[in-house]
Image 1 (cartoon, rainbow, N blue to C red):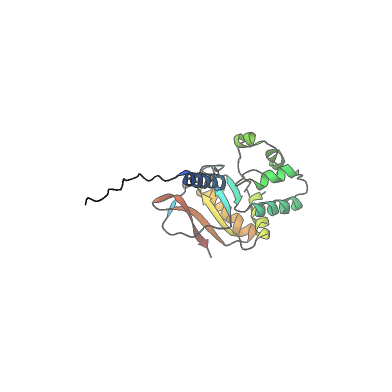
Image 2 (cartoon, rainbow, N blue to C red):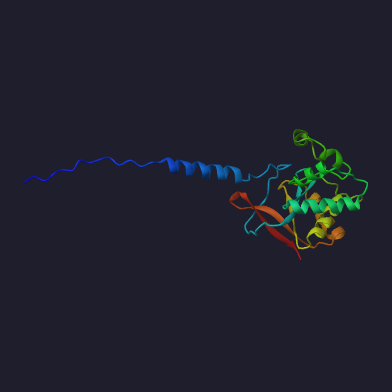
Amino acid sequence: MPKVKVPRKSTSIDMTAMCDVSFLLLTFFMLTSKFRPPEVVPIDLPNARTQTKLDHVMTITVDKKGAAYFSLTETSDRAELLENMLRKHKEIQLTNNQKNAFKGLDMFGFSLAEMPGVLALNPQQFKAYKQNGIPTDSAKCELAEWVLQARYVDPAMKIAIKGDRLSNIKAIKEVMTALTERVGVNKFNLITTLAGNADKQVIKQEGE
């Protein structure tokens, strides 16, 4: 007796749920991803072969022209740092909007006298504003004040210097002198790129 052939039926999979999950994941990554903000000045870093993890540091950036810029990694630290500076320089008056604008700065390079006017600019005006760096001269070294007040925020915070490979060595030395003589810091770090990996920033410890 011949076997009864069972007709084959094509199986279908409902992909609706899978598509929903995919779009939910895509939306999640789009909303939570934080892209690296553009730097105030482009810095071409020198190379290094050793590395140390970067975390919770104050960074002093020196561009090709020798201008100095300052940055903190934590927004809460920036808020406390600004209040410390305003208590010391009572001649500077800022509105709440200006204070919030400062907290949002990943890096800045302007003098204390410029601060009220710069922080009052809208985002487009601020982007077009040319920052000439924080004064580091011996007569009025405002950079040393920022570093000192940042250390009051967190004495354990690391200090890093990020210099362009074409920076004037005198400018880098001026920053180091301000740290050692005016702030009393004898240990700091130099930010470079790992040899063979131009996108990865590392720090090399210097000083005693």
